[in-house]
Image 1 (cartoon, helix red, strand yellow):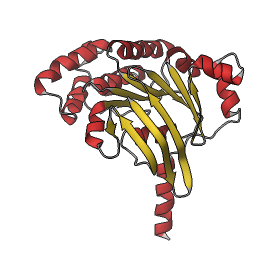
Image 2 (cartoon, rainbow, N blue to C red):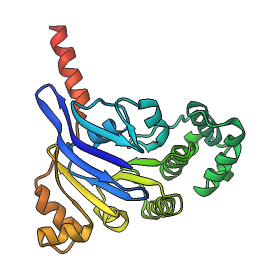
Image 3 (cartoon, helix red, strand yellow):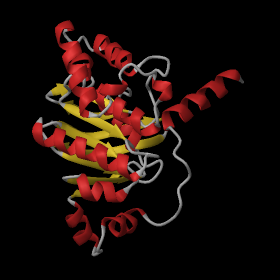
Length: 262
């Protein structure tokens, strides 16, 4: 469902992603793990057509991500790390807006919205402004919105960041059921290693733009001769504290703006 071959992304002379290859099967939950600045977000941006690769190839549901961007975009849904809902609209209106953007057939809009808002337990709050929602409710709405156009692939970038344990558990139950019942392929990033260990069929660890290893949690533990995924992760990436992740694309653009102003 996802095929990545020799993927590289450079910003000037800096390689944010450096010759990585992996594939994700249909219906698989695939975790992409790594420290701040490892290249996770850059990889997702290339997979979702937001960045063009410097080298390599990307396919999603059989579509060339670079050459068939419109078809690719119809194939996936995405829940960003940062909130992307319109707080001045109701939950229902946010869903309607997404349906228009993705050309969901008009006769299917209402039943799909009801089905999904019911799934994430927000149907009773469909007429409420999003600004009145808690962080967990907004996250659930974003997942419902990302599923509205029936994507084949769902990208989740730190989907449970800042959520309480109960809401995190609820969201992963939803996601696991989607993968099983609808054969939806799910690629996610998280800093909660226990989430990856509990939910991912396969785990890839990336650092400094390079893919270090890929396998099940058990395989990673055996490879590093450790007892837990956390210990395996630290053995592969080190124990030093990393600075907060800086978007290399934004940093590169800022440097160019600065040079042009001189």
